[in-house]
Length: 305
Length: 250
Image (cartoon, rainbow over the protein chains, first blue to last red):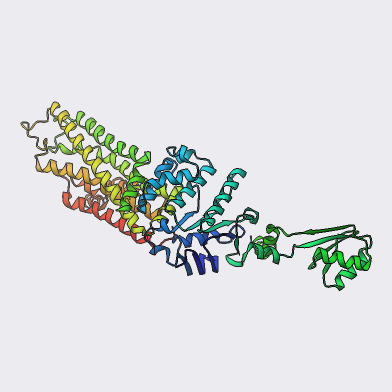
């Protein structure tokens, strides 16, 4: 069976609220799957169902082809970090990992290994109540890695971290995927995943909005365009529109062109003898593409609240 | 086995465990000693001297309540309960392992406390003029009643800790669980005197404290029935907790 997280037709309600609505997607090995959506979209709920913490109302999730409850030593199958703050403040970092290791019959030697991996060896004997958010985050990642699992799942791992911590976690996630592990990482900010995620699962209001590669999403985004400045915008507008581009006027002498490449625009204008003062292609950022995708979900949420 | 190991590590690596167990030991021994030193044959006509030296158990049970409640509620308040149930999705196994560790630790501490309170208390009582020659029995563990009463003093706090663990697992809040258990323990004793004697006795001997209340000689309840009532409370609370734990979202 493939080592992965499969979510199949998952529906979860809390009272009258539908938190997750018929959601299906897969986090595959060897890549970082970004799990993106506005706050309250159902990301954490989905992750809790994956870990068998919350029971689904319909559908469900499989980890490495099995229901979570059927896993013998779950920490060897999937490592997860849902809430970095979930630590007993009076317990030492090493002891937190000790009881976790014992619960799954993992070798004690693994504790020092994972502490070294996340750079916490020096504070192993400190009580976690004195940890910064960044340190707690690293301890949570160490806990997820205890069983050396092929699948990893992190809920908002960079939320609240300083830039150095963010960079460290991004590199770490890329490294885990490069080792062939399936990595599912959630975020409510798309730009946090730019350069980290290979694949994106976008949800809004508990529903799947997009399940696509990052490249695919950027290509589909309508934010791609070219800014053209010319002394005779009227003539250029007619010419380019006739050639199939979508043209909007952008102030006095500038035009926004979509659906046509910069070199084709330059060629057409040169053939017609039109002067070109500026030709600037610009790409949609991942954030823009995401905003466009989730606009409906967010607007609905704003109206409803 | 792995679940027992994990729960043992969890309990021994937080300071609240040490404090709760020390409180149980200290209150049992100190209150027993004080109670013995203030007792004199002329003011205590009751020939059962054992309950004089075991009086500290009534206070020690409050620490047993805190111990049982915190054993699981510290996991709910910190959020580690999700880590626990993700690491071992067999939740009943986890709660049973926790109960076993709580019970074992409590039994060791309360047995030590009961024997220590008895030895110290009896020595003090001797000095105050309570002697076998004076007609007082139960001054040694070779006496059947004394052995039973010390045995109950060792077992009773274990049952109260389990009752507390069960209630805490049901309500998932430290404050709520402690209030609920202390209420169920002490309210019957506070309201019972407001009723006619037979009703009052029924109220007291149906409460979880029946186990202790029925030990005193001359008490209307049978000692074994009394401890059976406390067992029933503990088992009942744990049964509801185990039923709920597998059905609820963590």
